[in-house]
Length: 310
Image (cartoon, rainbow, N blue to C red):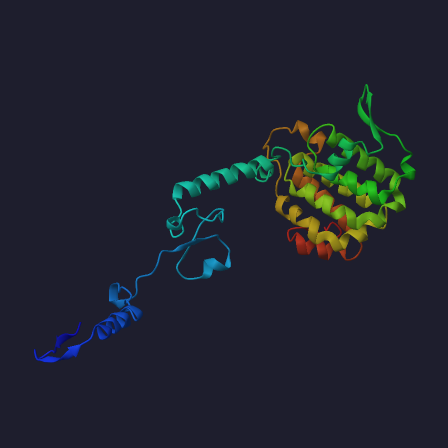
């Protein structure tokens, strides 16, 4: 049905068809009016909600981001309304608390407090010992426990067994630590020229044992390093390229000495003073390491003074 349309002046124009009305409505729906962004203070556009990103990531350098000090679990939201929602601070605290509890259970943070729960729980030595693959047994004597070898020690493959026993130096529980420490001592005493080719395989177990920060483990490892250096004339120079892996812990604990004042330290017979042991070990490394030993030790431990010059 035709209709008459009024103009802006009030005059009537010609008849308008239904087809023309539908065309106008269709053009409006096809080209909707665009909404202008809301303006804030001084005409600046209002920013969207900030994104929560983990620390030390590329996203933390982007704009409109907030760094969260803790783990962020990337979980897909179940509903569409939860996708743009900010994380609940209480839930983030619970996640951080559960994560720290999980780390303490693994002994990650506990090792720094003098031992942790069990720093040597995942060693390769323990796995071989539990399976019964090591040729050793315990001999219970009146003077103390001693390990016995079921195979002649001169016939052992040092490239296999010596790194295994060095890996057990990080153990803190009996009988693992007893077998590992006495086994290393026996192998070094009977090794001779067999030790030098295995030196590169011993660096990682020694570094792991020193990184436990356990006083007993570190003191035992330092004594083993001294015995290792003096077991053969070729071992000292062979350890010089690996000072960068071994000496950082020396530098960190070099000043850890026992200050008992005017009292008597009756435990000095056990030789568990970490600072003195580090000084003795560095002197042994310099004496048996050749002409390049001192400059490499000085580079990693700046406070060390040469035993030749003083």
